[in-house]
Each structure stands twice: as structure tokens, then as C-alpha cells.
Length: 303
Image (cartoon, rainbow, N blue to C red; front, side, top):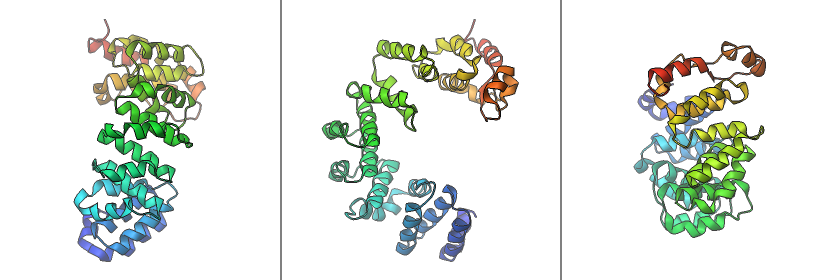
């Protein structure tokens, strides 16, 4: 079902949109439901979309995507009502998240949402503070670093890093990065950014020398912006346990290589027997070290 087709059908499309979601309740279908409700500026339809998003198995990502897609002017009435809703934390979360997507500053309301009773609202508010560069709220963000909720503590540390006070956040960012949860990559990047280069290199070296965190160290190395490590990365690509992260670091340092179609494979066996044994039936996109080496020589990155 195309968005243009929904526009042509107007509100008559609503039952079909709902039926589509009921038949296949995924993130994409939630996006269509939410986009349609907002497009037609129907209070009843938007209320239905919010309830669908509230109970979505995959989370409210489709609803947030629709809010990001539409213009701030169109969604403003809903966002103002949601961010001020004293009774519904999910709506407050939507309001703050919509402001984040469109880089809109809710002014004094943001300080209130940083102290919201709901953890998801507090976490979303911390992300918004960082995106807006609201350094005037740094004190509030520091206080959030002592929050009882782990997610809130992480986003407070991340926000401090973005606001230029990363030195206060490094211990928490390091802890989250090593812990390996869903925020690990964001924590790793923020930690590397927050530390002086010498300290970052030392920490990355300590990660690499431990078998438990070696992969993390290889990934962090690609965040330093030093292209001279390409030969070392190619060496790591020969190790099945480190190849995937070495490939990710390679692409971060050399984004132009994304245009090449023969530097990676989704068939680990193509990289050799060791890779086939290591990955088994597990799907993985691994770099082909020999081809990356040839590419580096052609680009003049390796002598």
C-alpha cells in the first residue's frame, strides 16, 4: 500500500490500513497506520495509532518514524499535548521523541521532563538535551548520572560527552561499552570521543590484549580516525573472532570502500575453512583480507 495511494483514497483508506497492520503487525505497518492518522489530522485516528504503538510487539519505532516523516507544523498540536500530558508517560515519551527527531526545543518543559517519573521519558529527554546542545542543563544531566535506572545513567553519560563534559562520564561509558548491552557501541564511541587521544589509545590497547574484549578493542580502534592502522586491521581480518569488527572499523575509516562489492562476503566459508568452522550456519558479513589488501594498495594506502 503506497502513501500516495492512501492520500488519494483519503479517510476511506483507514479501515484498510488498520487491517493491514492487524494481518502483519510489524514496524513498517505501524509506520503506515501512524503516518495515515497524522496525515489526515484526525484526532480519533491519531488516538488509535498511539494505542497501537503503545502495545506494539516491536516497540513504537514505526510510530516514531511517522512523527519524524511529517513536518513539525503538522504534528505540533499533538506533540504539545503529549509532552504536557500529566497522566500518560507514553505520550510524554512520544512528545519528547518527536522534538528530538525535528530538533525542536521545548524550552522550560525540557527541564521538567528530565525529572519525569518515567524512565523512558527521562532517557529520551537526555538525548534531546544533547542534540540541542543545551549546556545550561548540564547540572541536571550530571544529576541524572546518579539515577537508579541503568538506561538513564547511560544516556546521562552520553549526553555529558556530547555537551563537552565527557571527562565526567568516561567511567560509566567504559562500563557500558564493556558490558556489551544494546548501548555498547554508542558507549564505546562516546568514550573514545571523550578521552584524550593518548588515554584512548591506552584503553583500546588494554581491551585488545584481553580475549574477552579484543573484538571491542578492534572496533574502537576504527573510531580514532587514524587510517595508518589499515595493515593492522587487515591482519585482524584473518582472525575469525575479530574479522567482523575489523571490517566495521575498516569501513568507518574508509567509507569510500562501501562502493566496492567484492571486499566482503556473506558466506564465511569463502574466507577460508577457519571461518567456516567458526561461524558454522551463523550468518555473518566478513571482510576478505586479501582483497582489502589489494584495494589498499590500489588506493595508495599501503605501500
